[in-house]
Length: 633
Image (cartoon, rainbow, N blue to C red; front, side):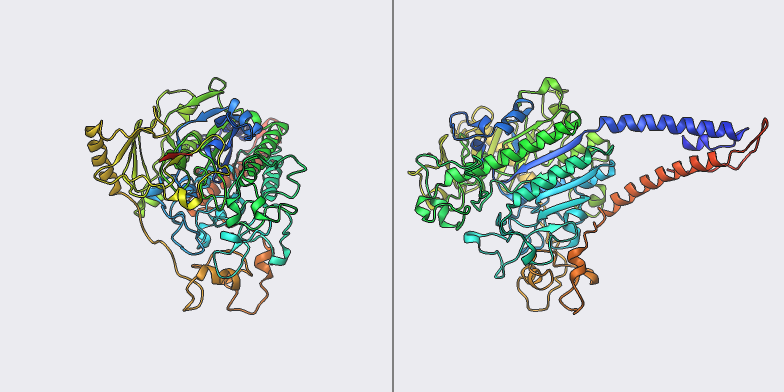
């Protein structure tokens, strides 16, 4: 189309006027297109229990989430939004658009296993937004691999990121957290990364009194403020650490009304946590673990409320779609935390509905008004968002580059017609969830022999009489491959009635289909070359201490300018520099070409007008240019 306006014209001024008309028309078309594309704010909670939000647990007045409940009242509940039973498989599924069985089933910290996370060759969701011309931001928990630079957020399509890369951090010290605050490595290190380098020059520069979630939330709110003056749409992924262990809340939680002592509480979380906030009970026998967990949720709710307010005050609400989900069910590891998934069975790490059916909804002014206040019961998976967003934005919804290299393609379905109310039936009719669970419509087949946390909690849980963590873990449902369990999770979401004996023909047909799908499980050690000296067993740990000045960071296939332990020169440059690595190569190229095209069009137009010389009624001709474009507890 552009070339037609750049062909030989009988008069230069008419040619320029035609070009001006084309540019004006193009501006109108592009502006209209831009205006129709929503901003996307994707909020992911960490280990949020089904019953730890008010709209799911009206029977427990302790549960107070007014801001989340408001978004639900103005949004659409996703009643069957499935995730993995652990953090990393869910996050890699979301980023890659693939079911965990086709990208990553491991739920270990990438500092120990380089093949944890999304393989570098797979295109991540932020790159899809970049292709569509979006600004992209990531704040909070990454947990999608970081052994190499190619796996960092800024290498996966995010313009800006401020995140911890592994599984859990101390909310105050920002160190990698395991039981009792111990590091996952023998050495203690900070896990906080900004764009392409550690978030500070040294551990001493980290403010150990500032609550890390306040830092993340502050960056989210600042980004929203900045985007209010931009005509470019944005994708903002905020992956909160809350309410994941450790059981820590801000020092002013009592004064701010976030923390309250609940009656009949229990203290098991004191077994593997050592600190809650300054001034909390010194004697762990006095700890109130359910109270702490719900205070973490209330803190999360306040942040969600701040985001909602900011979107409205910045006049972004009407053109923003908010998606909220947990990464898995609430954790029942009572020595660490105090989640609750009532009335669902089980919790995190188990493939009962309490472990994989996430508290989830969509909201925001972009959601069609007639869908607000409704409940959607169609089956969805977190992998579906990759394809959903891609098709909403009009970009390629297949990862052709990765497929060409032999990787599985994306698994998602476009859920926007269902969410927006254009259709009434979900396009997803079956789902493989982990190694031992298969869904077909309303039915769920379980074949695992070690389905722990086989119990149902009550609206108020845990309490002083609750079993210990080891006792809960010992509650196991055995569903063998030859004698699986079958549930109708539409009519019976709590999985109380095993239908296997009543429906043997359905069991056999689902078993056959499941066996076929299990053959496509992706497992590959895609790790690269360790950069630490020979003989080092935990290279990620060693590099954190010796290469990154006691910060978590990549430890494989590093370029020469990122290897510091072999040199004596000043390492300050890597810690002070905050440049952003380019997004995925193929997408970076396409986006760059688009920007070049826009610049060229503007240059040609400007050049054309500047060269017009009118002498009386005569016009001077010029050359043309061409551009290409178990139990109840």
